[in-house]
Image (cartoon, rainbow, N blue to C red; front, side, top):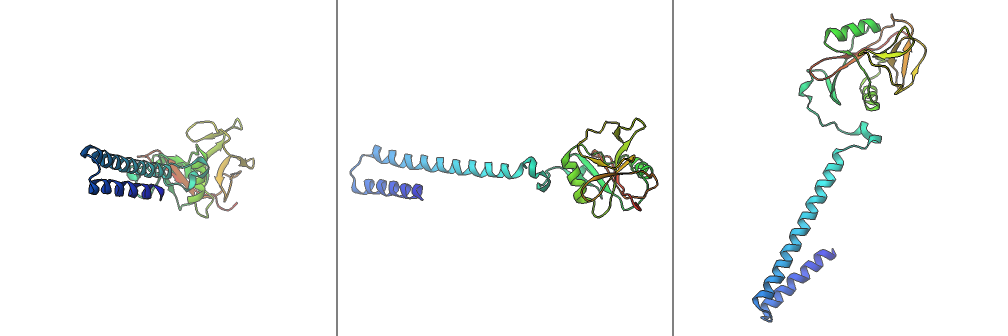
Length: 203
């Protein structure tokens, strides 16, 4: 409000200088130029402030990334697939054991979901619904966890249980001893590929 009052006072002063004829043309022009310059500076500051506010809303803090919109083109994902962080996900309604589910994903040019980041895990937990889907994590004969793409598991999260095939529960990752356990499955892949996520049933 001070800025507005100050601005109004300057305009009134310039108008009074002009009306009273107490000033030369140069003094009058200086006053008008100063007002115009201040107006332009104020406008530039407001525009900068608005742009910075918009950019802040577009970038998400890591602690709240799950609630942020993802700005990516979903045109690279096939219909029925959900794009997130450069991958396309398909949440299957079919049930099958881990091997069946992985083979089903492979037939679509994808694999069971590989979870690289905490954001990926939060995304799948949010979209999996009430099912407990298989993920692309399996314990090898050397007793180490590996993803279906061959990379070693980096212990990003705890896998509960001592079985060989990993699946998601409501809030965690668990394992099943039985390759015959039937689950639905989410699959994931990079754009232009496909993947599904199945879930284990009958635990």
